[in-house]
Amino acid sequence: MAITALPPDTDADIARVTEALAMITPRWNVRILLALSGPPVRYTELAAKVSWLQSGQLHPKLKSLCDAGLVERTEHTARHVTYGHTERGVALLPVLPMIVTWAEEHLEKADRPLPAIEQIEDSLTLLTRRHAAAILWVLKSREEVSGRALARIVMPSSDWTNVYPPLRQLVADGLVDTVGIGRPYRLSAAGDGLGPVLGALSAWSAGQPLNQAAQHPVWGHPQAKPAPRPWVSSPSRPAPAALPPARAAGSSPAWHNRDLFSHATAARPKAAIPVGGPRR
Image 1 (tube, rainbow, N blue to C red):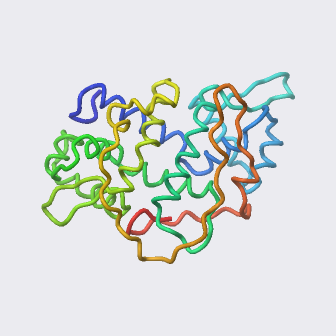
Image 2: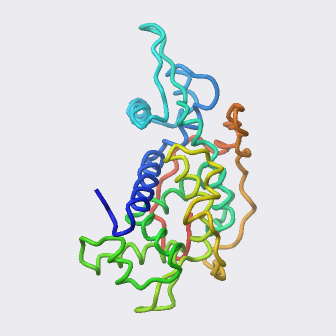
Image 3: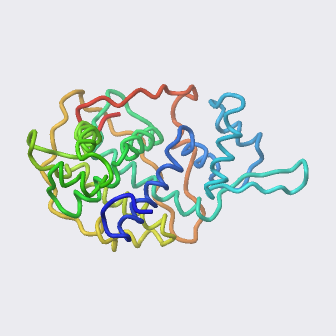
């Protein structure tokens, strides 16, 4: 069933990307996927890698990732069960360094270096706002759109004023710009910079190689970027530790837990992202 007034192919593309984001955004999911890099491991071995998870939290997370087709459970014997990535899970991993690359360029600078895993989680929070994907798609393809026109496209079955809460959030997140009330909306430099990430997620969710992202009908054609807004709410900080480069086709995953979990194992509280630009 269509969720927007966009052409069926575009509507399906947005729906697939939204679903892909919903698979990996829930808390701890990315960390579990990264902890599973390498040969399949037993439950106790995985639990030791994600020791910050409280007792009883890991099993339902693993089940949801298995249901999503990203992790597979292999029962060798009644007492020997292992968990590892599916082919789809392995194919998704190279998208994560793309998210970090975007975050390092566009997220507002925090007052302390952040591990790459936290940059991924903060970025995913922005991308999973309600209606965010559809709004970003429309603005990328049409450059400037009024709020009323956006509402007719993005949420055709709702009152057109319902578009303004998600629009205001995207403006506050720094992904969308406008010069004032009643004026058209357009992507910010940060929003336009999401092209490689959203193009890769589109290719992955359609079962295509990630290098097909460059041919995406919307995100594969970069347009002139608007001038970036200066971030002034916090001082700049040293660059965080980078993720390893995306793996080459046919090679084993190149994730190293020491690069991703280079922080205390205590759970980090998930505070709401305040207004003022792409924030951590």
